[in-house]
Amino acid sequence: MSDRLVTYHRLACDWPGCKETAQDDLYDGNATYEEAVSMWAYLPDEEYNDFSDKEFMHDPATGKDYCSDHWHYDYGKKWPHRVPGPEPEEQS
Image 1 (cartoon, rainbow, N blue to C red):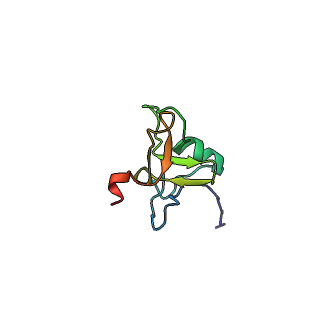
Image 2: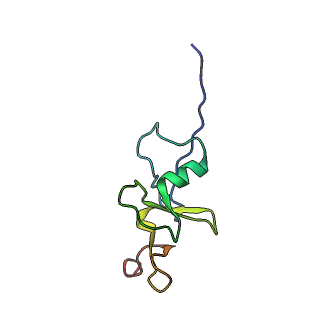
Image 3: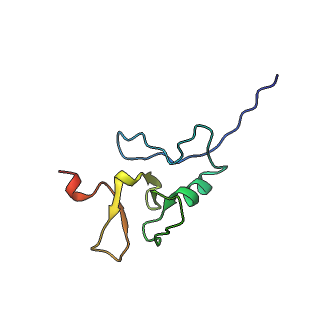
């Protein structure tokens, strides 16, 4: 019997204390981090797609990823513009 080591990438929420990952299956992942971002995360100004599995947001300015509980739309900027953090009314 031989051992085989396979490295794969999955997104994990970078919000402090959050343990959410984009892929729920223990054996699911992407070959590169860039592939994981393109498959599972929206960019701040990316148009919403009804047919994608994206729920995370990737912030290219910081390189951090956030689960759906830890990003929201900022309607004060050009719409749709996603920003890190829970909905403001949920933070109180």
